[in-house]
Length: 580
Image (cartoon, rainbow, N blue to C red; front, side, top):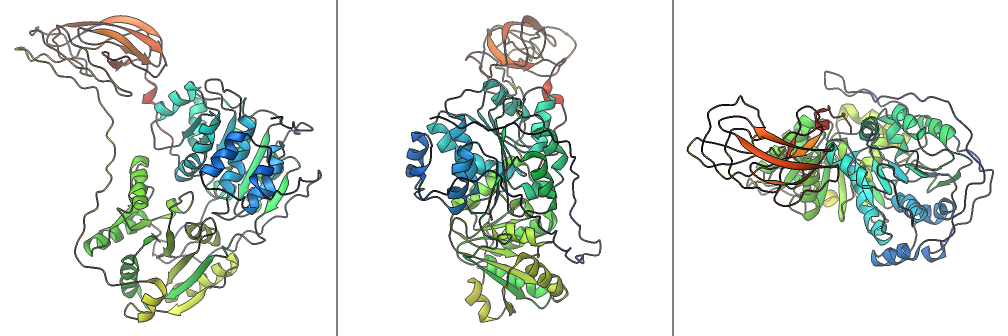
């Protein structure tokens, strides 16, 4: 396949963007008035005529592997944003696409970057295409969506986000990845460590650019985009085009093809919007409980982590299989919670705005704003969890008397005319509208995902002197014990075992730098952060000698070996960024 080259190089841009912040609730618990929505900018006019939209994927100049995988995945016809943007993005044009959540944006840019990267091989730590997203959940969503298509082209996809092991992400980059999906904070950290560079990136995607601006990522995004290949292709997708996105467009897009799925910010036509006016907080709690007990999957949105945890506890006590999702949970915990929700083990997901973007769950037909969102963009993205890919869904918002005015303003800004009703928890109309019902009242238990404890080197030894091998702490040498058999395990990867005549409290191998390998009384190869071969003795109650050879960052360890970290050179000791 022949790829079109860009007709001219991008002119340098020096503008600097400033981050924005979102208003917070006041201490007294009363929500501030919703701010007026930022006016949307007028998209730039396209100088070079855009290529026409296509009616079918077969009409596109894409590798056969992509077309075959589309059929295997049951994707038969392109969505409007795909039909309009793919002919141009495949030809190397910059694209500015506005589309609501669930409109097909992921494949719109995903197929383009995969097709344009096909047949190429990335150097270690130097991806060929970059997708920047604002949240960890959206990063995983994009990864899951693109992996089958990347596999068909033998392209490697790596995801780097905060809250996960940075050493594993670093190792993945060193092995090489053509497609990199990242949140800005973690990518910055990996670049600072020297584990990644962007000078080979030919195609860059900014997904959910408006949220990246709202979250204050503009300075980081600007710095990252200045590091990519000069004259590279840029694809920017956003649900709204406010002034912050305008800055990115002016700085980094060159004569872009502009496409908007619909003229508004993205109110979904297949979605029903309801505002339920409740009397007071007490009745609001009763209404929430009955809606949560309905058949089918439901997401309940609240403002704070504490309120999420309280509601989950109350739902479980009343027989509703619920689990919470918020920023206070580690990324592995959040992933396991989502898996529980997708598998049906949990029927009600209670969440803060952390779940408002990037989460796709099949057969999710209802979203409930237990706490109304702060602005119209939050409303649209919360509601975007349902009515995806042309399916239907409903969004219900519970509104107290003092919130009525602000809610009316928010709906006006979002371009939505909702159905309204005055509701009590005892009304039959509540069941007619939402499917609400009385919960069983029988407490249920849902396994709460626990934080993953870091694996520590562990060992066991037998002998009269209480000798141990494979320990991490160094101790002064002491009286010896009898020999025994020891097993040592590494901090990451799969540690092998070694046996031999060894005793001692803390058998540890030392090398020139980084991680080196050593086993009590055994030998073998191990991977690590540096090169080195050496032999070391274990101090403690006894002595253990082992020999090992460290291989430079290969990420593999041979059976029958073990790994230990050098105390003087460990990259894991760096503080992790507070990435979203």
